[in-house]
Image: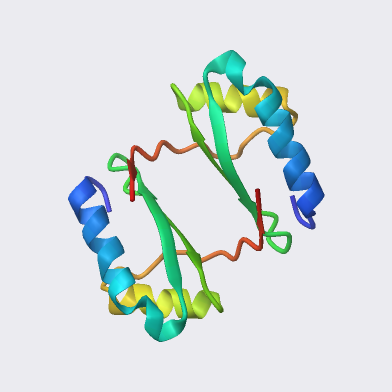
Length: 72
Length: 72
């Protein structure tokens, strides 16, 4: 979403948080670049599908959802 | 890097941490998916170029470096 603002990012994040529990997902962080429109979102979730369902219902379907089982 | 292990991710992260100060970069987190080989890395840095120089010197050039000035 090119030109995304801090408020829009927060609004999108809150929309996820409002319904995440219904899929046992927890959205931890989100980052965005207004110039490229790239938005990254980090969550704990039972599956990529559960993440996508929440994003769709919140009105912002993800282009890609990748599991990242390893973290440091 | 397909098949990346937790140890390899930590080793790569440590290699970045060892020299990050020389470019005023701080690598905060890294995440990876052994199946796809995708590795994400989050850092505070003066520029994308500084991040890439550290990654190159640490032996793992990034395919892409994106600024994410917005965060929640």
